[in-house]
Length: 119
Image (cartoon, rainbow, N blue to C red):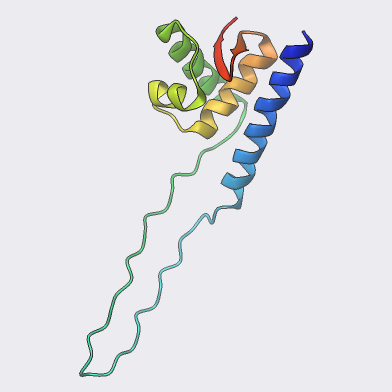
């Protein structure tokens, strides 16, 4: 049981780090104003990137992400890493960590050498 608490803390720390990074990102991208150029020189225009999709976190969406993680692990039948679960469930790693937190709390999953498997 002591090992499970240590692993839970590891995943909680990883989740909190990802969540802090996610929350720190700008929600809107600023469009750069075009540079004024002399008439003889060509202007270099900057390309803007599309805004990232905003993930809503509430009890309902956390429960759905837990279901996605559980289904991905049940389908695989073996231990998977966070990246492998995200790829199998077609959700982001942040959403995987939210679902894993839910499942760890309920005792539905456990760790196996830095990977996660159904309990």
